[in-house]
Length: 568
Image (cartoon, rainbow, N blue to C red):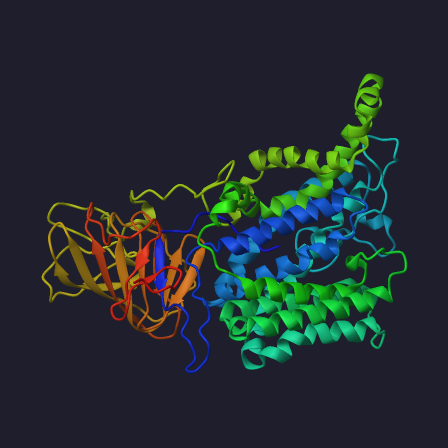
């Protein structure tokens, strides 16, 4: 899964973030910070995954909401957005986000397996080296189908259930590693790249190409969900929005109908469980996801009728990997608890319908997950380089404006210090200058240079800033402003980081950064970046918004909201 946070959107508005091709239909403007529609879809997908494993007979859930296809499509869109900055840094960040929670889970499972006497060498051809696949998901890890006995504390198939969901982690990891190449292919041949995995799945399903045992599951999973991942690219770059909604829905429904037709002739004992019919799953998921992402209203906040879901959606998104990795193992513990309650005659006689209901399984797993949120869930925050939180239902605390070691230059002078006669801009890449005469260029830490243009004491300060040619693989420390401010790009491609969200601004594009919003600035291209930095001094508002939404005003043209709509 795409390990993403669901924090409230930073107070920032972007104008003209995605340049439009002349004569092409305009794609909806990208929401700054979190897109609550995508967060809602991810939360629904995760709850559906837990439900699928809780209700033995609910195979229809794979048709009602194809969670895996949806999660791959969302992850593909976010990955394409991230790749607007240097690929190596993106892969390093995404790998850390995925592997740290996985290591906590895999380490726990392996300790339990070894404690019960299992070793990877009990299988023919097995070796201790294969244990690394539990920690680096390049292939399927070794595990026993059964261990112990059903008369023990837990059922003997617990290891099988603990490993069952790792195919998604493996497939996501490969998609992530291949994304720079897939994105380049998509940019050159979008439709061919989008449909290629689906074509491969059709060839495999017809038995035209036999697969080796070592690569069977990995290649099949890639072919099944590859088109959903690449569909995320089409969602991110606006290609999907350039197609008429009627055409997308017609194509989506046609793909889903083809999936049902194929499934109907390959049912066997699957009872319409599309997870057991790869080509049907590929067709159904692609059609379903195409319609969901074409709707994509790009919410800055959940609509008022469902705003009560805001905190649960945040919590689920912030603990997405914890939920996905651990829920199957917790369901095994649930069964153990229910079995022990059955052995108490008074309890079994009083509430037999509760103990036998699969709803008890589904409902009971969430308190167990809550315990994990409070104990090890913070690993996801550490992996994402966020402040650890026990119960992340809202925005993280804003970083302190106090200086740290990284904010000081080599001479040890505090670059954050503010005095009555020395006002400094707080550009996120580390620009910190005193207030010299306007014609004196000032250099600061990190190679960023600023020339003061104008200053009205107690009101606004303006600088013309230059960022050296990039990209730089080192991510600067984020900083905050005391007041609101604007950035307007004159030359080059500016990389603006807001929390864990990065975006690229081209010449002529601008952004407003709210007071207290942690941010940093760098170069996204191979040429220097020049931009204007205008910010309000402490205590002076940079704008008077008409509502709680932050506004962004370009240097030319009409004012726009952060969602791209023109203000009257």
